[in-house]
Length: 299
Image (cartoon, rainbow, N blue to C red; front, side, top):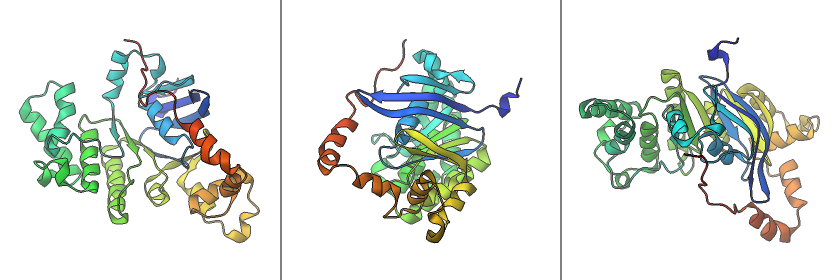
């Protein structure tokens, strides 16, 4: 039997997710290794955010299985999955801080809800987490009193409160200026190296992706095109225009996305769609016909 440490910490097999008649994910297979930083990338509507929400348990797949820590999370009750939730943390796009609480109180909340630690121990733990993200001196401020980048760091401190084995990041650089974005990237790298956590990062920011990734997964129209280490994608990105014709269709599509080129397979495909359908039909089809958070598990 293979050593547990050699097994993927997260495994998706033939995962399908639909909203009404719209198939958002169509047979996703993905292994995430312990201790690595996996970047999941793709254009708008590619399914990357839905993939993240399936992994954290917001949704259940319509088909396929999702395993975390060697357990099938799709068959768990809500109480069973709550035990799994304590082993991972999530940094949401906005930071998702409670505005009526100070930064320290936001970070303390998971410890108060999920542990029996004494208040003195919680206070020390909060200071340690805030020090890791460079916010200890801002502990008594409220979210409205700090910048967007500081909110992201405070959200990350809260995500780390329970010493998770996995950290999920949902567009960590979204809405930040380039300098602050670079600081968040360096923080993600430093925390992964210092704490040995597995990081799963959903992003379409390529500068950020190439800074933090060990491996990268490219999604397109609900399917994974390629999963490779960062060097493979760097090599493809750097193929000069004179040699781009030698690439196959899939590689040229990925290359265009990585480089942000205005012309290529992605834009060619979009131009083939009738304007009226693109403006009205496609938009309507992509709107979920279910609540953004659907009931997922039995009790």
